[in-house]
Length: 509
Ligand code: NAD
Image 1 (cartoon, rainbow, N blue to C red):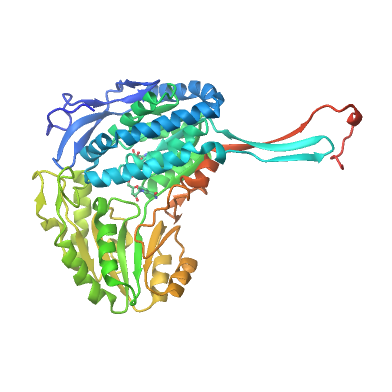
Image 2 (cartoon, rainbow, N blue to C red):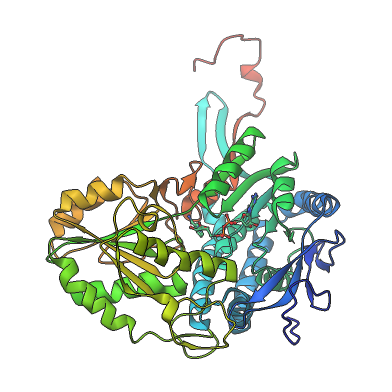
């Protein structure tokens, strides 16, 4: 990737441009519209990303459409070999990719590597696609008649991804989509778009034909272009809830298959018998990892009985040891993605104080191992958060851990179930019966038992309930294969002279 001296001028045309990837090459933007891409630890724009015009959107989709028939018809063996080579290249180049990711997102390099690893796991699952797209066969359903099914690709599929996992989230979808024979147009987040171009180049090196994987940089115009194009068969979206809802409704109205994963507000319920050392460690990891910019971050600790009095000081003590700084140094937590987002997250401290909550650790006061202009906001702990406070009701998407106190397990479950989101949750207890009851009673899609961030492995599927997902298909796992294929049922008879003649009814034998 190109790097030059950073600039503080966000509109500077002197900055390198992050291009589209169309027809197997980098394509410079022609719309005249760009968006600055920041290095969050430095607090300056280092690149501009092209924002697609309608012409560029049409060109990207047309390229993917042209590439589809030949890719669909390429033998399974050849497609599988390309997927294997791509897997090897991503694995070999992951350190470089992690640096690119951290330079635009801000997360610490070890966390970028972790994200790439989770993406690789879906890619590894996708290499086994031949087994997962086999059809069924029934012989002699009627005399001389067989029925069988095949799983065919959809055509051109659109993927729209969020800023917080610029490698992993696209890789939840495109390895499976491409392996089974679709062509993909990926619209990455405009906040950290370089990783997608890096992956496109690796895919080409692996032997992927031009047009099978396209990267279309852009904003709402590009998203709407995908949503409204009759040549795009499906949309896979991950992002905030209001946009997910819009994507779901628009894509469905346009007759497309759609999966739209939205926001989250994840609770961890801590029973009095839990291992509180494990609870304190888990709250730190799940609350502040990736600066809380994870849809599976824990943002509310629901403490039953006297748990809060014991565990809040333990968490506070651990927070004092966290090193916040430039993710390329030896730190635990990096900056937030943009200054605007940093300021929004920081504003919740004032809201907490106004609403009468107790700010135990204030992230605005953090000491940092990094440049002074970085988008810094430290780990924040807020106790006794009123349930009416926006600190509790809204997705903050930053390193802010709230503590809410309840008297009983039942009260905790009712609280979690009454929330708008249902992405992830966790229970911490040493009582197997309580944990079993929790998994049955809780209305959340991904559940951890003494595990704070229960992201399912690649061969299960990822997705929540309620406002955390729109559409009935989760990401990756078997549901991913199901989403990116459609079934044909074929009834076949090869001529047998003894069964000729006219028959207007259903066959009886
Ligand atoms: P976002 O909704 O702002 O953006 C997501 C994508 O939508 C981006 O590609 C963006 O360019 C596009 N977009 C933004 N505004 C749009 C508009 N008005 N019309 C059409 N497209 C638009 O989300 P973000 O800030 O990039 O990511 C953070 C959000 O994503 C959080 O809410 C987080 O919980 C959620 N998220 C959810 C999951 C999940 O699996 N449920 C995973 C990761 C992130």
